[in-house]
Length: 123
Image (cartoon, rainbow, N blue to C red; front, top):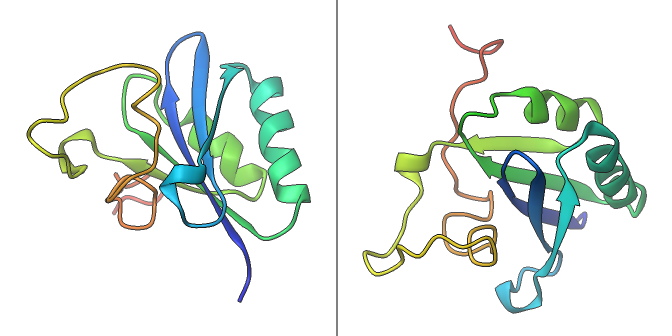
C-alpha cells in the first residue's frame, strides 16, 4: 500500500495556507503559509512529490478559478476542487480564520470531498 499525503489549502490573493496530513491523524497536521505565486506552489508540491507516495490536494472553489488546479495536476498532484456548499460542517463551526480553515477534518481532507467538474472534464 502506497503512502498518501493529503494537503488541505485555504487560498487567498496573496498567500495559501496549507495543512499537510501524512499519517491519517488530524492531530499531526503540519500547517504553513506559502506565497500564492506559481514558483512557491511548485517548490512546495515538488518537494512533497519527491518524498515519494501519492499527494492529494484539496481547496475550496472560489474566485481564483482553476489555475491552481491546472498547475498541481501538471506537477503530478491529484487535486480536488471542493464545492463550498457541499463541504460537511457542524452548525457551530462558522468561524473563518486562516488558522482553522485548511485543517483537515471529516469531509474536508480530500478523501470524501465533492468536487466541481473541471471545465475541461465537463460534459
